[in-house]
Length: 261
Image (cartoon, rainbow, N blue to C red):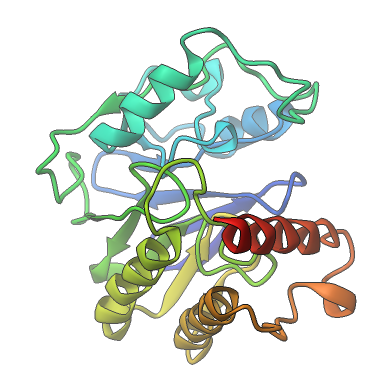
């Protein structure tokens, strides 16, 4: 079920990892960001949007749970940054091992990753609706982008600024993944004055003072990770939210990889 979080902006939260699909209403149709996860949810989303044209889709980054689509959603062009689209194409060129990636059986994979890369210099999403600014960065995954909808006071953050997930570094290539993540947070800091609502890829929607608090929490975690200190982060350890205990394992692996680098 869609829940309105700002004027003309609605969110559907999946049962899978509290994943957030975002709908932005435009003049002649809607923008659908990170549409998915489970098949029945995607079909329900299509039903909820019945009578409205899905004008364009967008994937914030090239992880499988952000690259999904469903035939009932129609044939709208699906965009991503150029680097995200290239990465998705490369990773999916030999197919995907659903079991290896822990993908539930209920996830429809037929339309996985069929996104078109926008020009590398693109800073605005091409659609007939409110201006949507693309904020590309190198944190978490290649070609990751947040979307700023300043007129609605909304930042769609992708897999950033979550209340249940710590900053999850891309340890597959960048020379300094912590610096990349800190640079992305600086970009969010720069636009925070225009933002009243943050929608993370996973977790609860944030508003008001909580927006800057999430930026500060992620920055503090990254500094502690770099320095090898206990981050004292409520998202890991005994204070982790029920069902999210596995995030502590992510932290342990990140700490181990960085300490051995």
